[in-house]
Length: 167
Image (cartoon, rainbow, N blue to C red; front, side):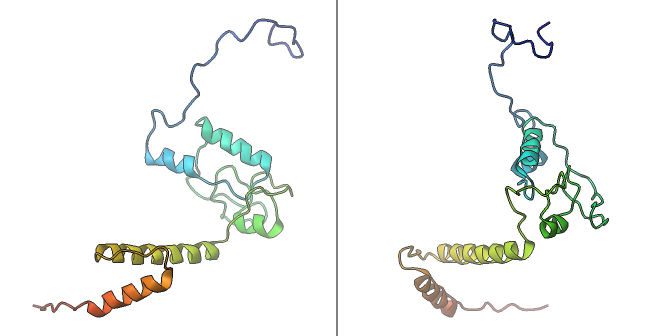
């Protein structure tokens, strides 16, 4: 029997070989599938990260519909599938959020205040860039932010408010 454990005497190659690699988004191009594929698995040990990436790769990952109970704080704060510890507890106790063991964390959990400050700064930069381009001005990428700020200030001074009548 070729499936018998420890039987490594077989000499012929594998009978059925796949010609193409399995793609989980070949027939399912929904936003739900794209969201699952783009998910960042943070706060996990190497083994648990690989397990979740395998689940995503072969369409086995099922997202949670409602939060689960954390095994440390006993609150319904676990919002990620297959996790047993919520992010605050895992970050505080330095545990893997999936297996609960104190392993080395591959991708540390990002705290939300840092993300929001970075996102706010990026959004401000994008808005100012968009405004200068819409106004017909060109950005001086070599000059730095000071030149861009001066250009923006001139555009703001030149704006004339429109009068609207209230009926």
